[in-house]
Image (cartoon, each protein chain N blue to C red):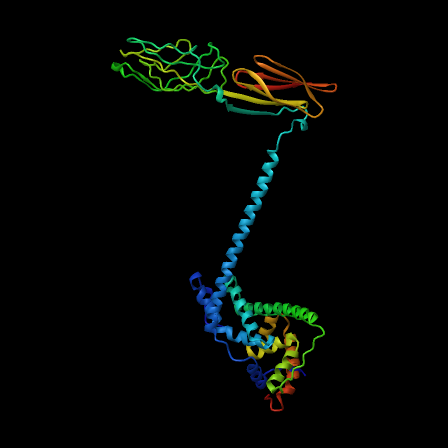
Length: 279
Length: 175
């Protein structure tokens, strides 16, 4: 038995098995097939890697979008008690775009040596506004008497001009030159030209500043352009607007619900509204 | 195994190395596995897949003491997977076709066909041992390493397989 286990040389069995296994396949022809399989496998690996990367990017993007959506959800006034939610929205009121009244515009000058500059200041319709804008480049054509003043001043008024407003001074074809510094107190234009100057005025765009003040009792939007006003008054569920008071620099709206009152106050601080709530 | 210096290869010689191994071992591997599974196409498919996997991991595989042993092992595993898959498929087909019986007049089997049938009736491990020992020319130790069994187990399988086939080979040892 042990001899049988140790001696396995059997020529007849080996030949029979070789006959059964058939002829030897052609390795050269199989090599082409092998290379083709290698290419296919490589393409498959690349496509799998690309698909995996794309899937990861998609999932990450989706997760990022979901997390962002959670933080930028809609604001519901009734959901957050005692917390002020303010939304500042600055829009341009088309009705306020145009040539301002001549109250702040210097009269057109005629004659030699005097030109006219337009230091027009528009803000809240009052003449006490001062424009600290600086003119841009000045050029005086001198002899022809028609100075070409092109400048733009961004109005930061000391008065009640909203900071968000933009005062645009268009080309000023006054006869003379603007010295470029406009202190607002004296709209002086010194022309050295001899021709006649005529101011062509300026156009002013005034922005509408809005701010939404919210409380548990309700919310409203405070607007300031030419004056104070409120819009979009929306009492919360169970509340109603019992009274409102609009003053020059303050708007008060009272929301009442049963025994509870919320006094929502929007105070104009010169540049924006500040909301506060008292209950 | 093959006159290729595995320690001195680089990316440029990868293809040459693999091709050399393929040319040297493909035929013998396919014949051995054909003896095991009874189908040359299936055997060739398994061997080629094994070489493709070796190509993908050639930097690692080429560092092995016996890269062809690794390829042989992968091919055997592939054959086993195919066998399991086909077995499940055959069972499913048998369940679907239960009740239908086909009777085919079979021709008188030749001696080689009888030997093939007897070989097919052997346990798979015995077939593998016979194929690698007699066809591939592996030693008992190499066969044991390839099949991941002990040398004693290889000897047992060789002995059992030869005993069962000996009757068909005739007195003179010729089928």
